[in-house]
Length: 342
Figure 1 (tube, rainbow, N blue to C red):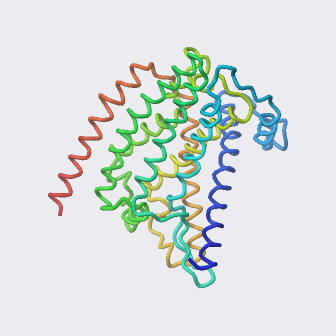
Figure 2 (cartoon, rainbow, N blue to C red):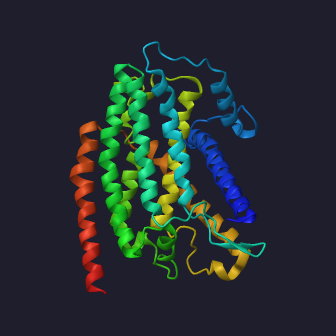
Figure 3 (cartoon, one colour):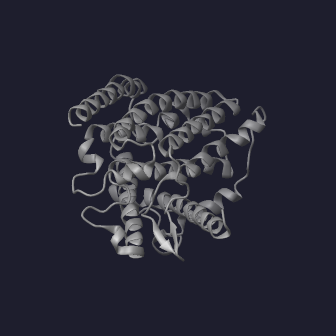
């Protein structure tokens, strides 16, 4: 790689990292403001204009809190567990294309940190690693309540990863590739070419599984306060405690972006040829991708403050007896349609 390529790569990494972290801060504020609006409350309105500096105040508060480590905790694992959650959460966005390729300084620049030919597998692999962070956080605390929360998380995430992966298989079959750029390209051209129109059942299964994978209501059984006194992070404090929530919001951003990429055309705008618009088309594609992702992030918040939490037996029954058979049936139907229309 020449010097310009290395510089472009570093700039893209910094932009994506900064974008995700700013998104995490914005989501902590949006969560409170939107929930307050839905419940006819004010929400944060003291720190900065309209309370927009509240995320910064939260960060300062966590930094100044005393960092307490339980005496009986397994300290190396206890310290490592939050990092095992937040690092994969930040790395997964690297393969998601957030805009069309643009030309700068005579060089074609893909608006994507890493264009790998197994992008979807890369994302699923990293999201699976996050399970270890939850389990090890509960186990290393050497307390029964966090351990129960960690064990619940492992069972829940493994169950819904199967349904989520199988829902994505039908999209991969139609695109004929594991590369996310190819999946986006397969959805371009026509008004109803997005996979939400061609794979509505896969979208529904994927969306439900995404809520379970990110531990959001109505699937936040790992943090069921009424039963677990807070779940796997009960014994954590200070910045280590905040890292769990940073990882949750980072995972939400990645999950929303992946949903857009697989089912809503990614950065594509129907009936608009972004390539013919040059650099302006690239900016337009990034804005379209951001708006679509923001919609699904809003949906995360809306669902949390609308639906009640499942019982644990209901949660597992939905994953194994409903979503998994439906995902398998959808793959069979998709394969049959592809064979008979070939």
